[in-house]
Amino acid sequence: MSESSKFFSRPLSRRFFLKAGLGIFGVTALGVGKGYANTLKSQIEVERVPVKLERLPKAFRGFKIAQLSDLHSSPLVDQEHLDHAVDLALAEKPDLIALTGDFIGHTLRSHRQEIHEFDAQYLDNLVAALGRARAPFGTFAVLGNHDFWSGPEVTKRIHHDFENHAGIRVLRNQRVTLTKEEASIQLLGVDDYWHSWDLSKTLRKVPRKSVKILLSHNPEINRQLKPSHKIDLVLSGHTHGGQISFPFIGPPFSPTRDLRYLKGLVRDGDRQTYITRGVGHLVVPIRFNCPPEVTLITLV
Image (cartoon, rainbow, N blue to C red; front, side, top):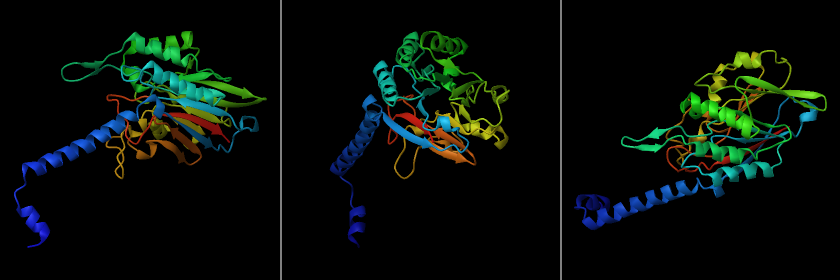
């Protein structure tokens, strides 16, 4: 009988189970501890992403867009975390700031009790933090699924408070023209893909040959985009990059059907999409191998 066979033929002692249990507990605790540490404000990373747009007017070369997404202001994401993310974005001296949805966490319930519910304080925290997020070409936002899931009254309040108290233009199936040295590009913004997005309305009367940058919370808007739309760049969030990502096997859950749109820069022909991992977190205060992110897009 081999040594390994002898080992498995022996009855396993209580000491063995105790050691094994402590080992498993220790590894799990370390993993949870690392996951919690990844959610701290000190772990927010600045991702600097150059994006080459073939049709970009010369005047917009080097144009910088700071992107903040999935802030999820709630008991799990506090004022300091939001403030630090804004500070990191402002330190990059962006020309424009894009906010791509999920500003709060909608009401979540366990079997027996509420984990958290909407409270005006969470919106006040956002307004205080994002009200400082100013850039020469403005700050623009689109709404995410959690903003809609909080109910129509909350959605209206987010829109109202952003525009009236924080100086943020909320694009709800709308567009604005950005002009620099007699050249221009189009900034488009649609409602969440799972709700009231309307790309046809957004594109109405947009010059076909102009460069178009689309803000869409959910990157799966790409399923509806056609070459004829001539969208050059999509900025999205929604996925949290998976929030938890295990070595070799990746995230156990993805909110997108196409894993290409989980995070980072994706190319579809002439169109590119950047999906940020987001600033906050949801359900549990854990991010594993997937730290929070502030993004700086530089058009080149």
